[in-house]
Amino acid sequence: MRRSVLLVLLAVVGLVMATAVPAAAGAAVKSEYTTFEWMCGSDPSEAKIWFSGQDDELMHVRGVVNTLVEYVLVDGAWEEVGTNTTVANVNVEAATFEGSLWGTYSLRTEIMGDFDGSWSWGQSMEGRAAGKGVGDDAGKLMKTTLLSTPPEGAPPPPPPPCEPLGLTYTEVVIIDPHG
Image 1 (cartoon, rainbow, N blue to C red):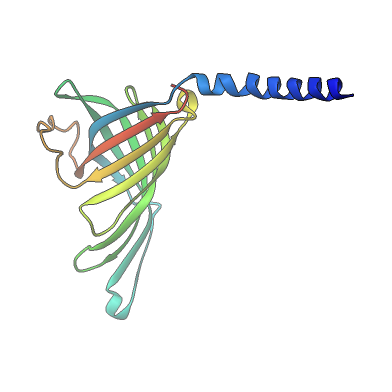
Image 2 (cartoon, helix red, strand yellow; image 1 turned 135 degrees about the horizontal axis):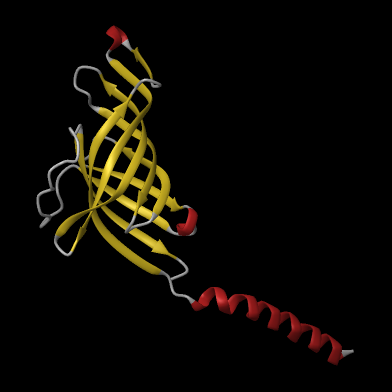
């Protein structure tokens, strides 16, 4: 009886180890990128816009679709790598445009990979974004800091591929838990 309990216990431990060792075999890999985006299009045609407050001083916008061209800093030069499509929402004071922005994004790039996620930007000089890899990049995690000024040492951006509506710099960290 003791021997069969010991054999069952050893079999369970062996099964647990057999499934745990491969998962731990590949160490997570962290990749860091400096990027910027030219905003090349904005489509408010499907957006909902309304005003509230005394004298309509607050503006609310939901669902503006923006198209951005993505660049990554590679060996000291900007390289065009893909696109970022965002859906933006806004709550701001109508007179000053101060307030908060947030939304979703769908990033498709050659170097960093493909990610879907969400972003927010309030009254500070920095915003935040977080996403998860999709397709071949499933399982990867992306954390982004949105910057209102260029990162220190970054070269000037190349000429825009469009009539730009704006420019955003970012610092990106991608974690691949499977190495």
